Length: 341
Image (cartoon, rainbow, N blue to C red; front, top):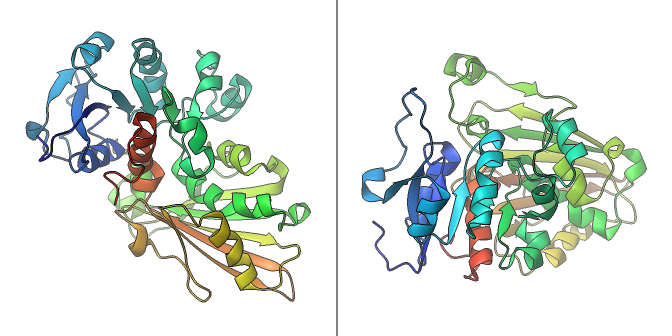
């Protein structure tokens, strides 16, 4: 059990995966929330061993009735989209707050979901009503929200870097925006696959899902740009964790790197998890991994108008579990930074 006296219990479905294991780790040190492990699989294939120490934590068989009887205030779904689509509606109907870490409910329309996920969406009503959990832009809708869709890791890093510039009107959108994104292997999940095996990843570097990555529509929705204005390419780094994105654009009405950085400093002045680096410094994965921070640095060439912004996060924390805890805090009316600083 945790070493504090929590006022809330939060269930975790998918606690054996990388994001689920990070949720367990974070909640074990949360001052007001205690984790409960929810078993939901009944197949004959043996489950992988959990990454944390489940013998120290309560575990119950998943069902909406069991969740109610246990008095859980919220349930995290650290599950694939098809599992979240199956479990989320019953939990919502049971009156439990739900925070879904999959992509099942991130897009606004069934047409968008069909295009990017290649399947029809069975609950367009929930697709339209889920609160999108990027607190820096949607805090008002997250406070007390019954159902939150946690953003993807790539869109989190991209939108935190892009949206302030679009909002300030300093991007020449007709010149296009290029987002060169790189992630550690844990972003693909814990399930074994050939493409993520050691011999395929080690001493290697590769692009994937070019022009069809599922996270592209999330970037468009939050930053307010059109698909033909963005070129996004994801790459697999031969490291465990971390995302670093380098964004290239042509500027309008900017005179210096300091002017560019001032936009971020003003927009994020009150944000606890955004760190804007001074001129001459750029983000590094070592500085953000195992934290809920997003580090942003930028450079502007005033002669050509070329701008470069670098954004770095831990894909499993700010890109998944940490942001989910941030959203849980908002949904339950707790201090937003609880369990994260």
